[in-house]
Image (cartoon, rainbow, N blue to C red; front, top):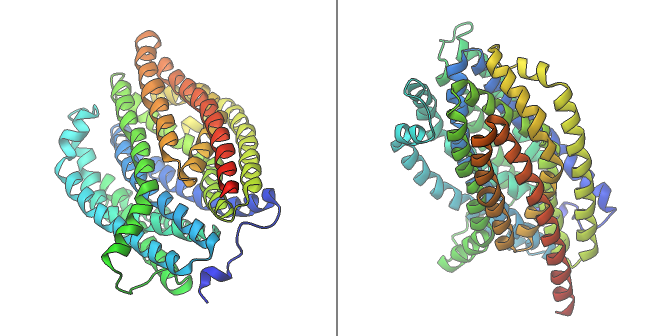
Length: 454
C-alpha cells in the first residue's frame, strides 16, 4: 500500500472544517514565503534607494518564473488529485515523476535565455543606466538558482494534491529561516562574512532554495512514495505531459500575463523616478503579505475541488466555493482597513526616503480597496483550472490584464499620475472578480449536470 492511500481523502467531513484544516498550515508556509521576500526587501532597503529600486525591477522576472512553476504545479496537482480521488495510485506516481522531469527541462531553457538577456531586458523595463549594474549583480547569481525554485514548487503542489498542506508549509519555512539568517550576514558582511550587497541577497536566496529542493524530493520519494524510477514507455510520458500541460500551459500562459503587464506598469512607474519604482516594489510585496490567507485558500481549494469532483461529490464543490468566496470578501475589507490606517508606520519600515514613504502610503490607501473581489477572482480561476476549464480562466485573466489593467493604468497615469495607476489596479481587480464569479457559477452548474448524466 502506498503512502497516498493512507492519507485521509478530502471527500468526507464538514466542508468548512476541511477547508480550514487545509488552509491553516498553508497560511503558515505562505506567510513564511512572503516574509522571505520582505526580508530581502527590508535588508536591501538599508543599502539605499538605488539598490531597493534594482531589487524591485527584478520582481516581474521572478513572477515569470513563479508563473511557470505555478502552471506546471497547478496542472500536476489537478490531475494527481483526481487520480487520488479515483484510487489510481500507479497513475499518481507516474504523474508526479513526469511533472518533475518536465520542470527540469523547462528550467534549463529559461536559465540560458535569462543569462543572455539581462541588460537589454531590464533596460526595456525602464531601469536607468546606473541601476543596470546592480540588477546584473543580483541576477547573474539568481538565474542559475532557478532549478532550486521551480522543482520544489512543483513537488510541493504534488504533495498538496494528497491533502497534505502541512509538509509543503514546513518545507517553505525551512527556506525562510535559512534566508533570514543568511541575508544580513552576506549583505552587510557581519562577522567573518564579506560584505556582498545585492549579490549576498541572491546567494542567500539560492542556498535556501537548494535546501528545499533536497527536502521536497526526499518527502516525495521516501515518505510518500509518489515518485518512481521505473522506465516508462514513451507513450506514458507523453500522456502524462499532455494531461499536465492541458491544464498547466493555459495556467502558465495566463499567469505570465501578470509579469508582462507588471513590466508595462513598471515602465509607467519608472517615468516618475527610481523612488517611485522602489516604493511600488515595496507596495507589491506588502500586497502579497496582506493577501497571503486568500492565496493559501485559493491554493488548497484546488485539491479539495479535484478530489470531490473526481468522486462526483458536486454539492461539496459548490459549498466549498461559496465558503471560500465569503471569506475572501470579509478578509479583503479587513485588510483595506488595516493597511490604510497603518500606512505610515508600515511604509517607514522599508526606507527612510520621504518620497519613497509617501508613495508607499499612497499605494496602501488606494490599491487595497480592490482586495475583496481580487480574492474571489483568485478562487474562481483556480477552480476553473482544476475543473479542466482553463480557457475561461485564461480569458478572464486576459481581460483583467489587457482589457482593464494596462489601458486604465495608461489613461490614469496621463490624467492623475501615480494615483491613476493605483486606481486602475482597483478597477481591474473588482470587475474581473465579479465576472469570474458568474462564469464559475455557470460552469459548475453545467459540469455537475453533465457528470450526473454519464
